[in-house]
Image (cartoon, rainbow, N blue to C red; front, side):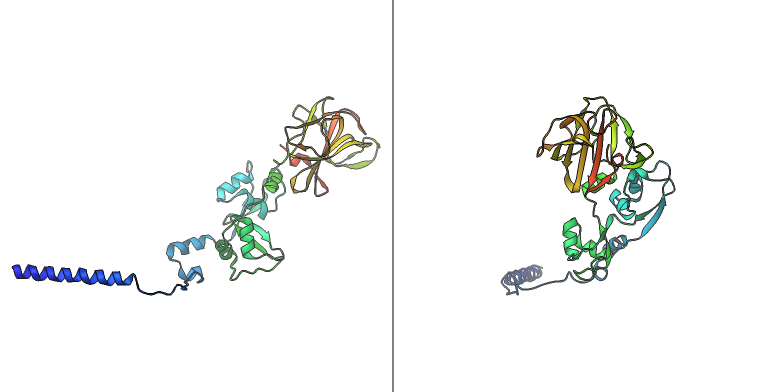
Length: 301
């Protein structure tokens, strides 16, 4: 029995000695430091089942949805698990407040926005600019290399609209320049000219009737680029904002700012008056974007 135990112990000891030398020697085995590996094989061939299932989730298709009473873009987006940006951009909505019952919307199967490729764009540069996954971008659009045809439409998974565009479309970009009670005496668009009876003319802003002396505030942060007097607008101010926006404030009784000043929505820039071509105390308010006027009623809150 003692011989058997001795024999067994000898075998176990020999095994550990062999293993120790073997693995110790492995630490000093020369190797090639220039090795490279995989990572460029199509995902569909290499990923295990869970990842293959994930890839299937990235397949882009569209569902149609008819707007119902009480619907908002935000509630529709939440129902389908996508962002407002996706529904707004795919359906080219210019104002989310004007949804109509029965209006047909396209909803994507995955979150993201469409994008028209510009000259010089590559999948890599687009992914970097929008801070999205290049791998996801390639999967959704079936890219096989870092090239894409200019002017082609592609889909950017997980991308979002820029802040200013989303605020504009949701009607939340500007603040009303009058914080006290006022009445809209003339809306944006075609109207009977108050100074030329029988003539229709285009009114490029909104007239906000209020008592003379009512404080006027900047509708958005920006820099004053003009402050003076004109025959049409009387005492007026023009403020330049980001993204090509400008605002005009006309018929002021007095101006409390000057050219070059930086102002915010808490800055009192003047008071309501009746100067220039005016039939009574009011503020004429115009919003421009890249030189063209927009309806303030769809852009302020």
